[in-house]
Amino acid sequence: MKLVVLSFDDGRRDTFLNAIQVAKEYNIPLTINITSNFIENPDLYSQFASGANMAMTVDQVLESQKMGNEIACHGHTHCNTTEDVIKNIEVLKKWGVDTTGIGFASPYSALTEDGIGPFADMLGNEISYIRSGRQVRREGLFYSFKYFVQQTIHSRFLFYDVNRKELLDLSNKYLFIMGLVLLDILP
Image 1 (cartoon, rainbow, N blue to C red):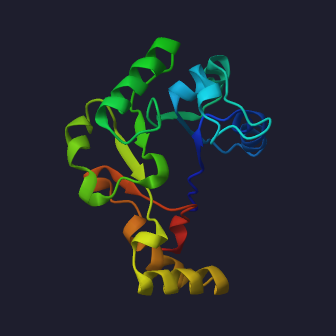
Image 2: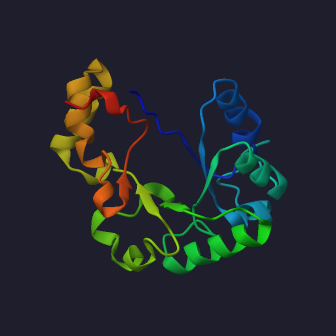
Image 3: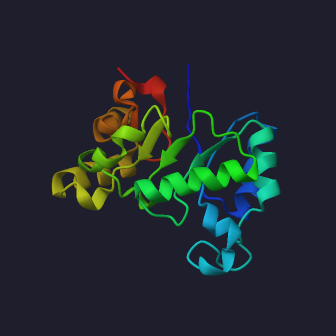
């Protein structure tokens, strides 16, 4: 069995106009990590909205969920604080988003395993999982070398070695993943 996780950050309109439409054609559900203040005040977020790349509308967020796509938190103002996540969930509920089992995707993948502490009490209550990712620049020279080699030669075994820390530790309800994870490559 192959399992692919596709995740799109911020609630950008191009996700709705392009990615969702292609995924729908191939019957692939997506996770859209919504920065609610971006959708309410798109003019404040030039880093997300280059050119015609503006925010989704609230109606597009709701339609995305109705199409079977997961809506997840990405912080109300794109921050890694519990207060920002709580505000994000409140706004999503106000819009009419079903927040049952909602997850949190760490902006900039800045949340590390060591920084989970403040979010631990939220797990199982306000949020069902935390998604972050490994940033190559934080991992040291040896990891960076292995990552570069894997990106060059595309070895599935080296892919597993480089990414094994990110592969689903569901016992803790944390997901540390980077990019697409193909679970059928596990030994």
